[in-house]
Length: 397
Ligand SMILES: Cc1cc2nc3c(=O)[nH]c(=O)nc-3n(C[C@H](O)[C@H](O)[C@H](O)COP(=O)(O)OP(=O)(O)OC[C@H]3O[C@@H](n4cnc5c(N)ncnc54)[C@H](O)[C@@H]3O)c2cc1C
Image 1: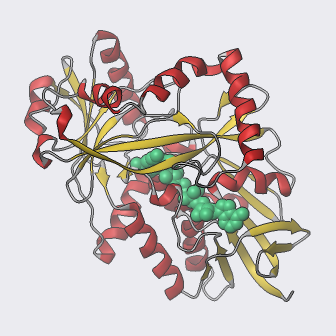
Image 2: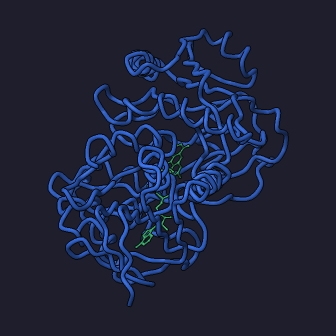
């Protein structure tokens, strides 16, 4: 097998791997960078299967990487799209409360948002109705005008085109197999590399372990399913979100107004049985399932981070009537018969800390002089991708 000499090899052509490649080639024009992906196209996993929301940094605790990069990432991606004529739906977002207890949390979110540099405005219920007449809230709602939606696949394909234009090789159908002392072995060849970067999403924890990192973590995959509302596109005019449980890294079922004006509800956070457990038996892996099931059974038994309740509630969301009822609380009128098909599901590469049995909230980067590992690139990882890439380069490369 021939061995190629290059400067950077990145495993994973999702948005994170490609953002890293883009910022690297911009800073080091002419350097030899290869991005490999096991799939036949870029963004076949989380980066092409997410809600497509450019978030605006409201939820995250100060000092977290998520807080630091969301607003900057939102700006950077809107600029990237504007320069290339990529569609952006600048429809904003309302966060609504259903009772007095949630109202308190809404005030907390306003504080967090402002501390994170997000543009947020606390509105009265009637002002919120001026933005979306269908919204239902308790006394106040939080308005985020800079939240926007894109087609994540469209953005990812534009990243790929930009990389190829600048001389970065995006090699598809090529799987990372092993790393030994500056040598990366893939399914097609081997590379001698100065730096190996692991941005492999659902596969990132395994690759990190192969390189001696991430031993304290494992991925517990959580599936997000969506249901499309077909009846009338004007029934919802903006993204509408509930106040989430801030102890969990999920935002609860909400309304997304997609880039082309459609309405969808979701995503759920249903514990998945294997990493690529999208539909039926696709991506089935018996060993992986047994490993994940044994972790899920332990979390269920110990009820870590309220896993028992989460599992019961989330599994019920496979029932479309239950899923519709979860979303219906956020609006005044919705025709339950107006929903169509389930759309493309996505799976979160959510890290679990094996010793604390808690879900990791922030992005995690581990590195030495030879390799860098991006772990837990969960939501809002799409939004954060460009400034997060700059941070990784500055700090680790
Ligand atoms: C349901 C859902 C909704 C979300 N909504 C939003 C949102 O609205 N806004 C937002 O900002 N973020 C959102 N996110 C988060 C966002 O999608 C992720 O943070 C982001 O896509 C992570 O990108 P990535 O490149 O790390 O991972 P991925 O896109 O999963 O890319 C990893 C790549 O690595 C490849 N790979 C894996 N193993 C190997 C191997 N051995 N060899 C070669 N290649 C390999 C895979 O094929 C894949 O293409 C959502 C995520 C989910 C699941």
